[in-house]
Image (tube, rainbow over all chains, first blue to last red; front, side):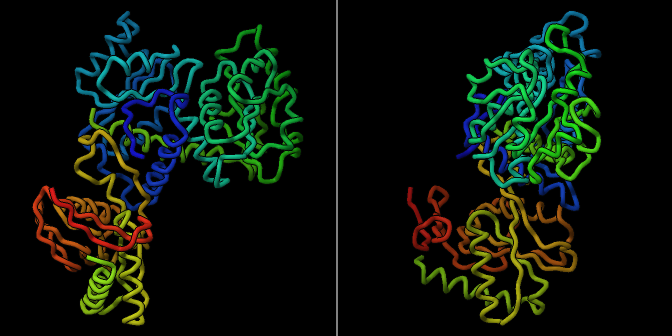
Length: 307
Length: 172
């Protein structure tokens, strides 16, 4: 197959073949990082705008570095410095960016669907860098890429995703991507944050982490998003750690080759103990390295077709 | 060209490579995916057989170095490049199935330079069909096939295409 999408909005709308296409392309771009000159001219002359209406450092930096390695020019705009704070609508801001001949718009937004709204209205490529609690497709892709790299396959693997699933776009992108590629996904967390409703997406739901850990091939721990928590959903940090944290003791339940993942930033001592995060089974830093390769692949593919 | 003609052409190129390169151990046969990689493998076998010398092979993907990114509605798969490093002091021979406009070869030159600075870079092609758009020529050619621009050259190799080896000239 060939690639023909200008936008990456979510993993829900991608086919298994398209996901594999991005992963294989990322293999080629990961190799670029080992060259003497870690830069290729693929997007030379293109302009990428990192438009982050919600704060983010690692995702923005990763996209920025990926764009630099592809020879694109990069402009960063944060919500606080944009005219959104003066009352300009999202569409008007974006149309202004397009009038500057931006070829690729990387958008992080607190509202689900914002990237899709713009993708339908702009000629530029739109890459979703996280929209509300909807999707964070490049994070999903880099998680899947890392699993595939370490385990050689996705199909048949048992993947546990632990934490605040209800408000997590990372969880949704992982669920869509992993189930399409044939993994068996189990969501783990308190019933307020992991309602049974999720079973409709073809995954299992568990409220007891000890039952899931011994069988898992991968444990992906989501960050507890203090900034999004409301009292009615979340009991308290201490109680969460007691019931669902990956402590040293609980980590002993894992199979020796089980991968431990976390999208970062880590809350040490909350969702994961320091010793576990820094242990041999942890691939947390591989995720960061792979994120760069995956984002290069996505920018190359979406930004590299004629629109 | 049929399978036997292809075999003879590649064998002759192997002889020429041996003649031109006194130190075969410093040579890298770098194939351009997909068929260039297979042709590089076959050339390496002939060189080993004839010269009783080792010769290394590699892969050089040009997709991310092309000058037409952004002009096509669909993008083909990018493959990872794989070259024995460092390239300093070595001779890299770019291997492709068809030499046409020269743009792929130019992209390959650019790609190789991101890995290092070889002593020499040469170019080998199974078929040279003419119509160059850049000042590029091949050092080793299996067969010169004068063509019209609207004609197509189709190379088929058993290992890649699951069809008998052949080079077809498609009219219209």
